[in-house]
Length: 260
Ligand code: COA
Image (spheres, rainbow, N blue to C red):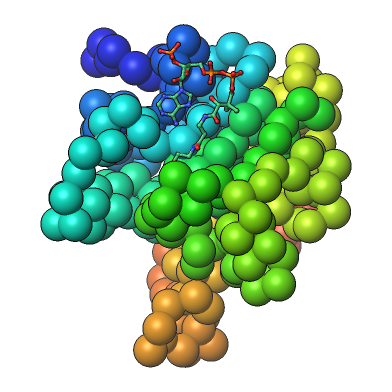
């Protein structure tokens, strides 16, 4: 197993838990952490024994407190643009487009790049102490890892405008009401909750789930007709062994076995 400096990986039955591990910096995302996450996420996505990836932060205080401000404080216009472009490509859009579902277990502060990371995941669960916000305008910059787009998609333009313009934080209950997270649980139950959702996902066809990710994402892509993508992905399912197994199992009144 590869040793990383800033992340920890735990493999369990059918899933991988990746923990961002810079607690003294509240798990802020520096360049090296982003590269390590890219590496480990690619590895997990290619591993056929992995059906769900859970992403969390170490400690009980912070999921990720943003991009590492210390690293970009003296950047030029060109470097700023590159930072956002590379980050989106290697981590944020990358996660959204993985063929394996990613669940963010938000265990505390999810600010700036931290909330953007959680929003790039397919599903979010938060602990009761979680605080979420996009405080970039307080630093004289805007969210650059997809925050202006994904927050608007998840909570609507009015609430996204308010969160971005005020640079304010919302608590876990508000995030639940806003639809920004799917569940709020006690800190000690957070990973269990994520694993419970993972367990339900793991019963289903990985091929069909990947196709569903592509079809759902198509709704948010400029110039792409999501209904057409759905038709294409739906049709392709019919040529797969997993479709045969799923339908045969139903007709034989047994549980489908997609992962043997
Ligand atoms: N980038 C770099 N370092 C960060 C960081 C970030 N985004 N967020 C926290 N840290 C570091 C702090 O600099 C401090 O390091 P130090 O001990 O070397 O000085 C350490 O993490 C602990 O943070 P601290 O601010 O002392 O904790 P706190 O409990 O007083 O406050 C926060 C917690 C989250 C409110 C505060 O850290 C914060 O506002 N962070 C920045 C959030 C942000 O603007 N993110 C968007 C970035 S684009």
